Length: 295
Picture 1 (cartoon, helix red, strand yellow):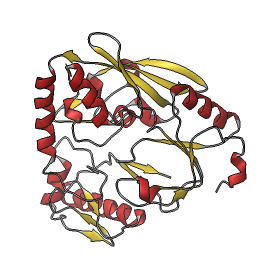
Picture 2 (cartoon, helix red, strand yellow):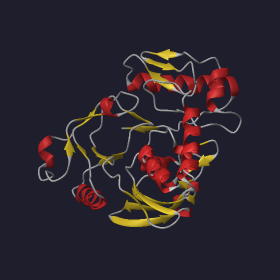
Picture 3 (cartoon, rainbow, N blue to C red):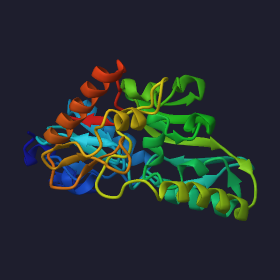
Picture 4 (cartoon, rainbow, N blue to C red):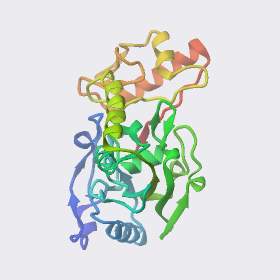
């Protein structure tokens, strides 16, 4: 693990040390990182990443930590958290630019006030824009790729702008998952509407999510398959209520794993493996995680 004195000279950055993943992640488990940085502007983010790389320091970029499973051992990497990067502005009748750390709720509030529709499917999903872009977040057939005009990134010491096509979007997938690219912000294309109409659509999506399980979770653990939704396969396999230590397959929605008794990441990962093996044994379907493992 890094020693504290290795970060002398970083006092101008907003820092948290140690950074406890169990306190910051929605699943409520994980060890610690020795240090976390909270860049407050795009320029500060770029300067930080450039400096870390020039000094040969490894880093891990995170947003709201809602669809991730941290390791019980924490990480020896520096954590770069984007949540202070939350600026947003309208740049034309239908285009909006937002920084990667803006939370979905704040993004949707802005779009509602501006009378811009198209992103309502994000309602109730507790993610940052960067996280949504990273995994092509979406529900009910609506995904981030339908909104992206371009994405501003940091890669290889340079700032670049990727077009929608450059992002290689697919179902819960993107070029960003291949690593080597940090999302700075994005220009989104919306449609002009009215605040009232946008509000109604947002409320409809939120009402659908009210039925989802409560408690500490990562949201849906697995991607849906071509044959059936992952939750349906897990349910039919009789796995609702299956437990490993403090981790349990939700009895309300089988694609959720709940941390209800101080589960460790190891217990949650073991339960994920058991579910995958059981579904494959019964249906010959290999479930693929949509969550991200942090090491």
